[in-house]
Image (cartoon, rainbow, N blue to C red; front, top):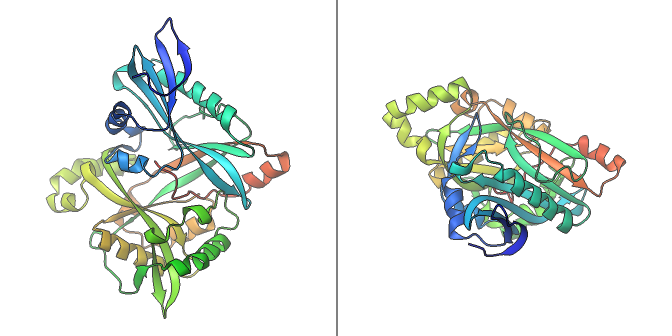
Amino acid sequence: MGSGELLWRDAEADLEIRLSHEFSPDVLNLLQRTVWGSRDLRYRIRGVEGKLARMLGPHVLTLERKGALAAVCVLNRRESRLFGAPVDTFHVAMMATEPALAGQGYAGRLAERAAELCRARMGTPGATYAYIESTTEFSLRISDHLGPSYAARLPLTLFSRLWPRDDRRVDGMDEGEAEEVRARLAALYADHLFADFELSLVPAEYQVLRDGGLIVAGVQAELLNWSIESLPGVTGRLIMRLLPRLPLIRRMLDPRDLRLLRFGNLLVEPGVEADLERLMAAVLARRGVRLGLILLDERSPVCRRIRTHGRLGLLSAVVDGAAMVVVDFVGFDEAEMARIHAQPLLMSPLDVF
């Protein structure tokens, strides 16, 4: 290997850490083989190279042992928004170790160098953040407490339809409607951190439901393809045992080749929750998918409305789990941090996981 900018070397141990902005075949191979998650939800990412292609500013840190890849850390650097102003952000998207070398401290060494990289190259104000499982005991070593920390819990809100129904009122969004939708989203999520609709809303990926020509609800959908190793909770383990014995259901929801849509930038103003469900069902039907995933901060009023409306589908009731977002900030004073801690976080469709 040995390609990319040298960040650190231990000649005695024959270890090197390098930085690149491209994904080598060895890195892609490791990421394809990695099982993500922890005790509750464990899965592999199918087509990982397509996910990586969505990154706006990839920073690929590799730890090489005796010239061979031992561990990799993938950061995605991009501009985000906070209180209407730009913020330089590093998203800790992926951290993986060769299975045969797991538990030998290589990820820790790589995390230390990644922290140094963020400290040296991040602008002010800035933030470093990562998505993790809520059951994982985790300290954001990547950022090494660059500044005051913040955490948010995002319940895994599943939307499922075994036989999703299309709806003739659902259509793509015209370019000329984008500013209207951005303005409505900005008003709906005015008290949420990292609302970045100017950057993350992609008209070509956005679907809307209309009534009388007016946009009632909207959603941006990204296809995820996972191979599930385990699901959270007793019910999740039961599902993993039963599905292989139910051929019809397995053909619809095969955990080894699970296709689901991650729904983001949800336009769902109070009172139109049923229309949002019709819209999501229609998008599932058109994409040939039966399962959707919504990740919103549990403190978000939008999240509470969606989760309590009651028509999310069977899997929403039987699969229970959550992700955590841990964020470290730099360049914010005490008053700004107090304001930050009072607000829910909004997950961006630009985030890759």
